[in-house]
Amino acid sequence: MKVALVSPYDWHTPGGVNNHVLHLADELRSRGHEVHVIAPASRKVDDPLVHVIGRPIPVAASGSVVRIPVNPRLGKRVQELLAAEQFDVIHVHEPLMPVLPIQVLRNARSASPRAVTVGTFHARKDGGNRLYAYGQRLLKRWFREIDGKIAVSPPAAQYVSRYFPGFYNIISNGIDVEHWADPRHEPIAAFEGTMNILYVGRAEKRKGLGTLLRAFGVVNARMPNTRLIVVGPNSRARRRYEAMVQRSGQRGVIFVPEQPYDKLPRYHRTAQVFCSPALGNESQGYVLLEAMAAGLPVIASNIDGYASVITHGVDGVLVRPKDTMALADALTALVRDPAKRERLAARGRLRVDEFSWSRVGQQVESYYERLLDQRDSMDATRHRLAMRE
Image (cartoon, rainbow, N blue to C red; front, side):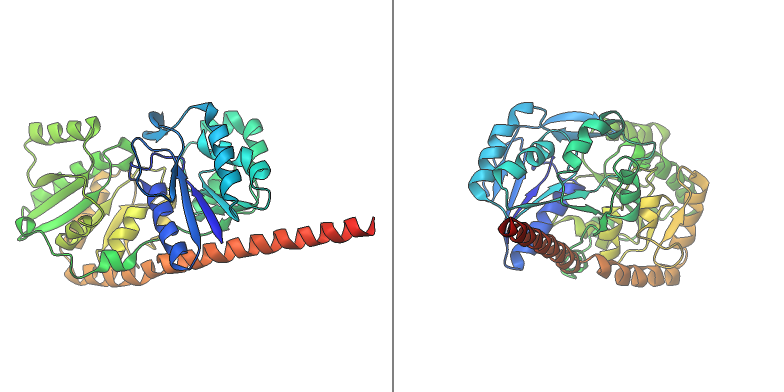
């Protein structure tokens, strides 16, 4: 098969959707398929199989900032590319996100009439989606152009179904289990000698870092031999948290710059507990899968997306979001109980195998094949009807 994977986001900005596209492309290539990526980019991309369309700019969206192109004149370039490549499958991630995904759906049928279109919906936002709500009538036109619909989790499917009812095949995010479990990742010597709690992510309010910092203050007062390691990109919000920690004199908190993919597992290997106290807007929780694959016990907030990955008390611990004392008590209990940490980590490692890229890639490949078979069957039926006339 010749497949196009479309991302709406700046290819040079790490994130859940881009990571998904990157690893899905690798997995499908390992299965013998020719896979191209179509995405905007803020600078040159050397990979000949990545087609850059559009220059992204930062746009505020649902408590976060996304980097997408907003130029409505991308259609001509999209049409030329699709007509030249003649893909079998055009797989658009976040297919109703402006502007590139919609331009791909708008031109796919005319430029690549033999292609089937697939849309994967990743997002899950508390409180609804203004774009979907206000643009529902217009977006339905492009929604109907999607032959096969995927959601990465039941909460993601429920979320998009509120605006665009239909059948969504659940195929989760994938995880490179071997990468995170690789024993060659060595702990960071400078952080050894204490009980380390790890947080990985942006410092946006919705990620719950403020709650974690307050909870850790309680934990550290109870157990001074604890450390909180915060790994993530530099930002204005993060600098505010750093200043807050300095002003309060809080001990044991270390802020570490964002780490490249090949070095981040060292921080997991250094930690004894992973914590992600997000307040909402998580469809699944990729950072949870990374931590579980790395062999860490996980404490996370009890929100729909996280609860679709973790079963409380079985392969992780779930606590009420925004509840500082509940989080502090859960962290304290886990730090003090090595047997529980070991049990949760072992069961988490078994659970994460269900999200391996080999399994996810096989599910996506099978879905493509089913859609292509349906297309061929419909074409054969039309041909027979035409012959009768």
